[in-house]
Image (cartoon, rainbow, N blue to C red; front, side):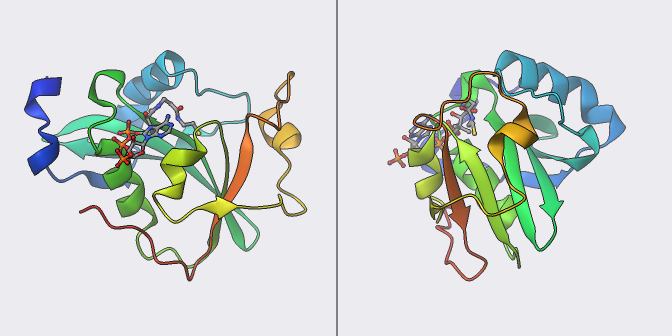
Length: 156
Ligand SMILES: CC(C)(COP(=O)(O)OP(=O)(O)OC[C@H]1O[C@@H](n2cnc3c(N)ncnc32)[C@H](O)[C@@H]1OP(=O)(O)O)[C@@H](O)C(=O)NCCC(=O)NCCS
């Protein structure tokens, strides 16, 4: 198992991104639970994983909504956070994306590093309708977009 000392921020290993398969679902569910990212409408078929040395270290759900995408459930294994894994993972996941990518997040500073900017949620992308949050907190959970033509910070 990869441990925190194996991840040297000065020489980070590559994070390979691929769609999650049924074999990954256990680990995806564990991360969703432990990072408190799960929501009623999440769809395991829409998940991607980031792996290094064959181990899943990051997850995200990427959903198509008409001509747009919605990014949700971005998470990095808790013992490997704040070492550049998330930045590399999201950069690789969205590399070459040709649609605008929206998300609602409580960690906007992280996503600003990746080319996301504040946005008004477009029609059809409503946080309550999608996430079913009972205690909606728009002041904490902000909407951001990464435009298809935005240059994404590349950390790899
Ligand atoms: C948020 C998360 C995905 C970031 O991944 P990470 O691997 O820890 O982040 P990185 O090390 O790649 O950080 C990249 C930059 O974002 C910053 N950053 C990371 N997490 C942050 C957070 N929660 N809030 C603000 N800034 C953050 C880092 O300080 C770093 O900035 P720097 O380069 O100026 O030092 C990860 O911490 C996580 O899984 N958190 C719990 C789940 C969560 O809150 N997900 C987001 C919900 S939408």
